[in-house]
Length: 218
Ligand code: DX5
Ligand code: ZN
Image (tube, rainbow, N blue to C red; front, top):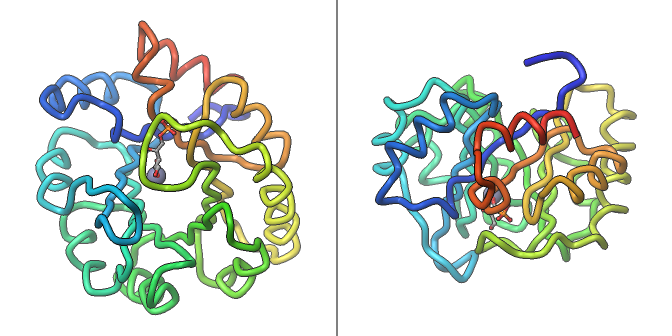
């Protein structure tokens, strides 16, 4: 990664799963920093996506960092499955059951871990996790679906969390997820975010590789 470039991850949720081999080829030939994998259980969020089997199938087609976003009610019993299928980073929601226990398990397995915060949850809830996480991810849409509109009312939360991270002195990435495009990336960055998950915007661009390199320079 070049200095001063944005850290950009791609969420494959909105891609054509029938064409996953080509999607992975495109991702591999781009400057994308990580692949973001949205796991949904149909209970924590009103949608069902994919699980460890799907992730292990694509693992051998990419050397990129795999960032698994667990939108499930109780992630703890599944943590080992996601580590074993090839996750490099696993994030769990503050609003889910056993969040701290899941993060501790990830650390004991030598994996990076992160906490995710929903739009309606107070930024103050993040504080108790700052001693353990590598990533804090702010949802800028209600989780469940790709292609939604960026919620500008989350910008203040991003800057509040950015201040908390600075104060705690640990090296923690502040990631945003949902509705990111060239314009909203700029807004989130201005508020203090330094890693960006992008889904539908990238897959709707005529040239994926060019679009990634443009977003990295925004
Ligand atoms: C939403 C997911 C996001 C989403 C991002 O529940 O967590 O990762 O796929 O997609 P876009 O960029 O289309 O909002
Ligand atoms: Zn996500």
